[in-house]
Amino acid sequence: MAKAKVPFFGVAREYAACGADMLPLVEAALASGGLLQGAEVASFEQELAAYCGRAHAVAVGSCTDALFFSLVAAGVGQGDEVLVPDFSFVASASCILRAGATPVFCDVDPWGNMELDKAAKLATPRTKAMIYVHLYGRMGQPAGIEAFARERGIALIEDAAQAIGASHGGRRAGSMGLAGCISFDPTKPLSCLGSGGAVTTDDPALAEDIRSLRYHGRDAARKFSRLGYNSQMPSASAALLRYKLRQDPAWGDRRREIAARYCDALEPLGLAVPREEPGTRHIYHKFVIKTQRRDELAAHLKAQGIEVMVHYADALHAHPLFAPALPQGGPQSPNAQALAATALSLPMHPWLDEADIQAVLQAVGGFFGK
Image (cartoon, rainbow, N blue to C red; front, top):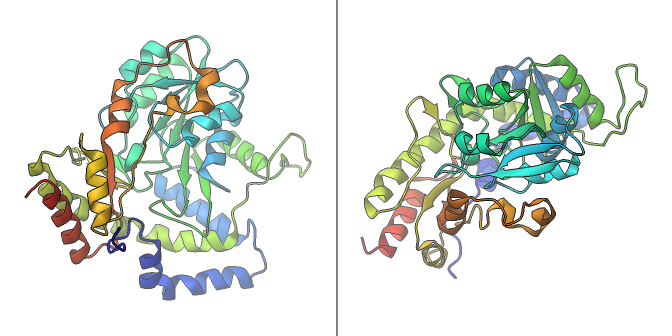
């Protein structure tokens, strides 16, 4: 295999370009002495809430915790069912098991967002909540999703792990339903110094619940009144994220520029490409193409030094973790299974230069004889 010449992730290049700006912010947070939940965290929470169009944001240790805490704060537990797309990262559904509830897997549209008409057929009197995932940075239609949850009296938890900066009809990811959950994992559009996440909400009681859950169950009176967890954000991570949040619109525009170049060049080859839909801002956390020759193409690109990945190789219900929760015969998810067999993620980050883009396009074109 050739040495990688087009990296899949951009974290190293981001540091090379912005490290001189970022390091003093991290050093100042370290020098403050308030290493966990310091002033930088409080400032970041305020700025993130404003960015997402929410009243509150609560920083936590990971988006996985954000999802779990949101379910717990919504009262989801033993005997409850939660609707979840059958195609996503495992944390979108494992958080449901962690809360003691049962995931009900719903098929997705051709690009991976939950199909509400199919979800409607799966809802039962036991359905307590739904987790809606904006897969790959493509935001679903907020009004319709919120109406679906409201009409059924269920809590809407928005999994915006991959979608910060995305929007639909002027609504930003993180602004939907009872709670929005965002990831700052190193693979995400905005990354911190390891793992990190946040919950956004307009509900002050839910925000207070999340604050309690993230710090061992301590309440507003500083008494430990419930079972809680240790899920705090380091102040240095918050300092870094405050800087990156200001860059997010420009970095998102660059991702969309590259995506448009990819789409224009690859669609004529017969590949299915993720065109941005009218009224939306797709921030392309992943740029995913679909082809029946996915595995052959992936091997060819890797041999050319182009790093690619598969997101994801299986529908969620196919993982052994969820087998005990499945109905007899398993869910019917043809679109999820088709994505698992055909989806291939190409390099996508703001630090790709013209040579990188040309290398990707030439390598893909060469595979198809163009």
